[in-house]
Length: 79
Image (cartoon, rainbow, N blue to C red; front, side, top):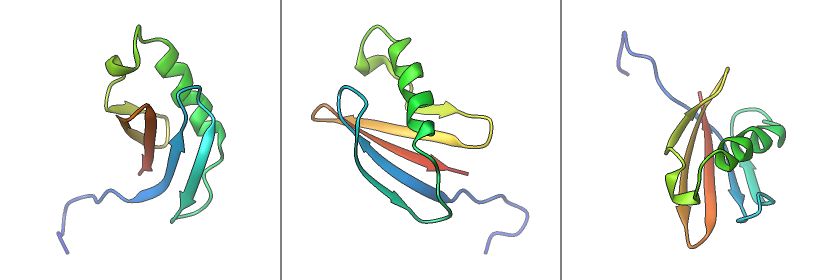
């Protein structure tokens, strides 16, 4: 292990439609509520286009890492 360094753990993965609906969700480390996707979608709505969404969004407890591929958003919740 890397002593003295903090590690990042993937907690959950959500696949979202272009309208923000959850298609698939998978949780590895505890259950993250779907409300996290509401927060993400609020941030998406602040952008003028989906392509302008920052790849990493800070949240009070987590970081939200996202990519868009073929109109779907892949949203990873990491801590």
